[in-house]
Length: 262
Image 1 (spheres, rainbow, N blue to C red):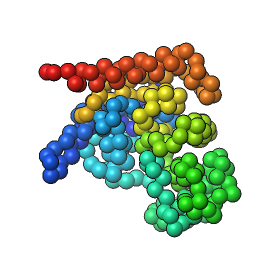
Image 2: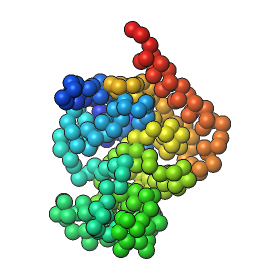
Image 3: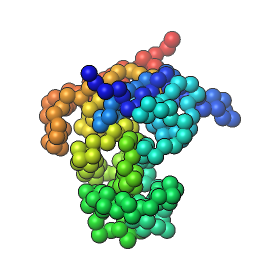
Image 4: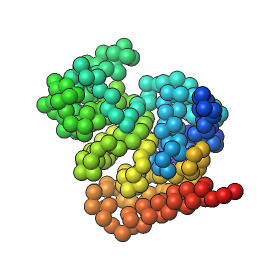
């Protein structure tokens, strides 16, 4: 018998209201993520992927529906939930190590208790030797690696990632994917990952949720049956291309149906 999900999303609806009227971003989206799973969310641009992830982090409330983490409804930011954004959001006047330690200041905790963990993450992400460098002295990939270390430094149970590699070149992105899988395989954190890149989602994930065009609803769920561990060479295998092509076709068909006259 499987354990209950650590994350549940039930009937998630979100409507934004502004000067130009209302925009419905989510409409009844459901999701269940088990502990230690790596789950990705894909779909056409503007379908509500990031909106859902931000609601999971309690950065804004749902209009309707419910999100729980570890059996408790998410109503405010929680320590057990870490977040990595599309940009690194590093403070330019702080060096890399000071940026990594910043969440401890917010939580009023002593970062020295986590020194070994931080040192280990810095080693895994190939940032050793750059602890005293400032963001302006680091590449985009290095800054984003530092943001992942910052999110994991205080050992959250769940990691939410909102297109963290979207601004990186293809080669750096591959490096980051390999690094992220290495971290996940060692820590077995529960990860929910938003991306526009379907091959990236397939390569990284145990399960991929496909969203319809806005407002985001459930379209299809794919359980990825590629074996683990996954070397980068798996992305050149025929079965990998088959999965990617099927997900692309699902999204394309959803977009076509959405555009068709009623």
